Amino acid sequence: MTAQPAIRVQGVEKSYEQLHVLRGVDFEVERGSIFALLGSNGAGKTTLVKILATLLRADAGTATVHGFDVATAAANVRESISLTGQFAAVDEILSGKENLVLVARLRHLANPGAIADELLARFLLTDAGDRKVGTYSGGMRRRLDIAMSLIGNPPVVFLDEPTTGLDPQARNEVWQAVRDLARGGTTVLLTTQYLEEAEQLADRIAILHEGRIIVDGTLAELKQLLPPAKVEYVEKQPTLEEVFLSIVGADAPAGADTAGAVGADRKER
Ligand SMILES: Nc1ncnc2c1ncn2[C@@H]1O[C@H](COP(=O)(O)OP(=O)(O)O)[C@@H](O)[C@H]1O
Ligand SMILES: [Mg+2]
Image (cartoon, rainbow, N blue to C red; front, top):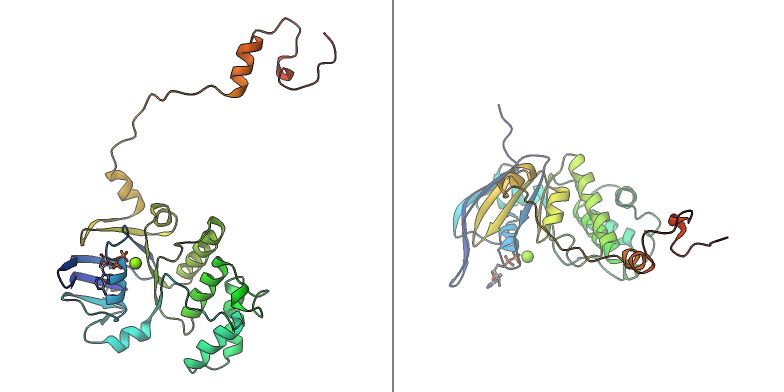
């Protein structure tokens, strides 16, 4: 028996009035894998994530998440997922720990404090746990946001553009958090506009373009679709060192220390 996929999308269509955003989207996400949905701004990534998270209804097609149909078993789907949007949904006035405790309480979990401490440690926020979130950097906020969405251990996690607007350091921190998630067995579907993000993180990459998935494969498979590497003639500007050497004469007199020609001491002639 083959395990059924964590997410299965078949022929999903969605329009906003005349705007036909999704025109028949198909893909599957294997359990415990990281799947990147790559597309430019306005491609329909958020629309698709909202459909999978049961926040929006598809006009046509079917989708299942964790084995549950998003249209007919929405409550089961919601119990199986978390959704982290592009903009951090954390409370600025509360500390990081208080934010986590609040969500754990809302979910009626036992030992909210212990759950909060465990997540703070996992996302390298222990030292900042008692500080107001208002003082956090962008990367810390996003990590806290992801940590909050993991309370209750959902098997499927949607991250909608998790690193948009972050600086490179913060982006790397979020990437590490996502890798750790998948290593723990969670299925991650993330959307991104960045090829590099998909390349760094994803087991499988699908490109959403003009309402359809135009490419779906592993990074290695995608690279094979590219034309072979070609050799190009590129004019190279001289370096300052080369300019210097051509002015002073690259053929230094015999006995001169050529390695020390630029800026080094010359003890004798
Ligand atoms: N509620 C809405 N009403 C009308 N148009 C919308 C709505 N939400 C999104 N759109 C439009 O649908 C297209 C896809 O949006 P979206 O799914 O947010 O794309 P992405 O997340 O890939 O940037 C865009 O052209 C957007 O302007
Ligand atoms: Mg979006």
